Image (cartoon, rainbow, N blue to C red):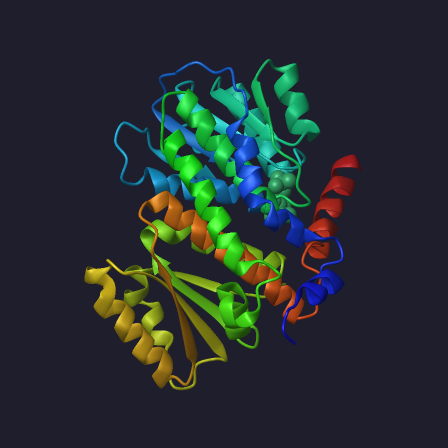
Length: 347
Ligand code: PA5
């Protein structure tokens, strides 16, 4: 089946694809947020968030890797803050719904430790706790799911960090990346057919095997995000591997009797040092009887590269869901678990 617009609309009953279509506008909206924050001196930053709300933290951490004058950034995906968190720590508590148990627990902990806290959510208990405690809260833009609200979460967080004196991406670059998203959308949208649409081509490549995705360190957050959306939208298991580390372990699993795998490589043309590693991996993938697809990232700044790759891969997960005949928006297993936790808390 070619995922035509009709196919997408038939399977994606909730219209998740419309959220993806609006990513450039979502980012544009987030650029307009008014946050009345003054510069603050902090010596570490902790980003707390789960699933779709946590991914922006991974990407922000990757963006900070080569920056100077930015305190170390840690990402917490769980209930507990690390021991080193104290009153000179900036804690960003991010939950799209504002109802996620782990993030709310970490937020309460940050308040007890007198941290400098900023909350981000579309509402929910997180907003309530912020209001009750006089903490700055930023309301996130509307989306059907937390994962499709990524531009809103990521842009809002980057703007908050800039206001506090920690600029990871300039306003100029943030705006440029919105143009990049628009350009990418014009080639991977639901109306673009398979021959010209890389997202649909990657979906075809991955749809009948177990995806293993390789990229370099700066794409770590993008890879995690892709895995999560493969899980949640396409209801598929997936594995992500970062190079060069994968060349010291994962590489051995390319064995003639490898599982029914499909490899995907995210490559930068300037990756001269890593080229031999990628080339060898590709050779081993073929020898193991598996297939691979390469994504070449060509943008001129890291932020644009990350945003364009994220967008391409999110659309891929949407098309994969359609190819598999599974509605991408509902996440019944996550809902089941969240309901059980809620009932347990009420008991
Ligand atoms: O994308 C999703 O729906 C999930 O990964 C959620 O983001 C996750 O369960 C956490 O919920 P929230 O983002 O509302 O805190």
